[in-house]
Length: 360
Image (cartoon, rainbow, N blue to C red; front, side, top):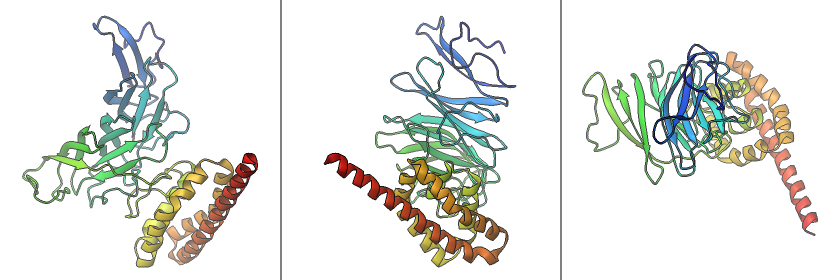
């Protein structure tokens, strides 16, 4: 509670819970504080990594057990999950309010951010450890690890410059043991280099590398991840991982919305388990991003989409507990997609007509 902040004009000058993260900037000679602020809420919060950009913004990541960790409007995830989440926070050059952005990042397990890097476009790359089966991933994610999530797997996530949805990419990295990402670096082509520890006998390796098999109970690893890119709308994994639904995420505003979780469970339980369903999912993820982008930017379209999805979500919820209504859900999904497409096309025609009249 007496951590040095005075004279305090910074974002937060008081301890909020049993343990807070802090962000402190010393002057060039180390003789005084340029700023010093607490960063946390009602739980235990830990700062594990910090990077500063050319203009003095500080990007911070770590772990939070707080239900009221400070977040900013419109970010990717504004609410916490039960067992603790990663946080990604961008503090302005003076350390004062408001924060540039601040977001939770996590799922139904324990999530910890251990390392962070930024590129020249101010995208933030974060790695660490997650035990969440529904940690947010994107459509271009690596295959979901087999059997390792209960012990913890690595995540590698690229957050866009505003901290909002969609994530640029987010992927699991691991195998059947405990895997932890401890450090991350970038090259000029936006490849992400990750290192840490793995206890997995099936950790993903590539051909002709230095060591392709586990030699001890815990090995180091070095992985280079190409600059994958999500197409928009919040991502979604067609392979049954913790991905989310493009249109539903745009409509409900978060990949962790209960309606999105219901639809994701329906996809994983019924659609990707058979050939026709996989074809439908692949087509959906190919065609829906532009629709999702149009919806996300217009509240009337978001409201109309939520209305159209209401019977689909209800039917999917029933199907998740009773297979007999799965077919009804599938049909409802097609209907909702058709209704949504109608609204989008009509809005675009209206906007085009308005531009033509304005130009004339």
